[in-house]
Length: 343
Ligand code: ADP
Ligand code: MG
Image (cartoon, rainbow, N blue to C red; front, side, top):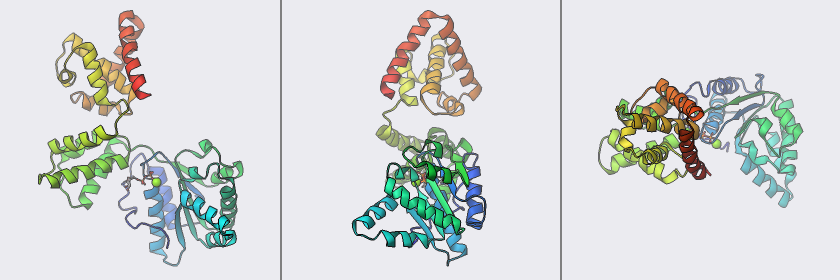
């Protein structure tokens, strides 16, 4: 059993600026395992950005082109547990022998090996043997190798023999493409304005984006209602109210509106009344500081303004902080609220 999940392939792994290098290196490795200079291939990136999907796709591709190859996918957690079990039952040699037979070793989330010295020693041994025999090794980690604390130096130096490639948060266009692909493969119709709305609103990681889509599909069948913008907004609320304790756009807009005693709607409206413009600019300023939303996304959430308006707002607020003492105090008061909530 190779532990591969055939649902993860290259076909449904959307390419974008955020993953281009990792994806193409992965594809090269999948076509010529062990014979490219990408050995080991190390893919790193934050939670939910597609590490497991990509390395599983590599494994599946190899398995499909050559069923005789022994492709093994293993999470580092499982690797550690198997190793500990083998120590306990006096089967360390069997454990090692099994891994030495592998043609393509895919080991996920190696940050989990941190601090586990005996397991690392075993992995070092397996790594050397496989690498010397021209076998392919593929690894993932939640951070770049240089930040992997608690991993032996000699292991880290081997990780650098091949190629290290990162996965970034998906950009807007990639998020659009991912949503379209997922819905299409589920055979579900989703209007373009809903795709756009979701791609703007969920810009953290792909797993969260999928969570929103699942909730949306559920809402749609529960209410026997076609997917539309209204339903999408509801679905998003469910997710966001559940998980958001941090400082998000809603919280910033509410807090700033209250502070300046303007209505929440006015922040998103066209009005150019001075006190509203100021509140709006301040809210944008904090959105930039406290959230990971892009300028484009911030603009969208403030009544569909464009990113240059956001840049201008941030600049205006920064200038005012430097020149207007009273204004500076207001900003500091607000900042305190956000900081204490952000923890
Ligand atoms: P990680 O291992 O980095 O935490 P996963 O590989 O589990 O992330 O990805 C989370 C979810 O997002 C999976 O369901 C995966 O299929 C999906 N996903 C991530 N990146 C992409 C992409 N580029 N195209 C399509 N789906 C993706
Ligand atoms: Mg993973």
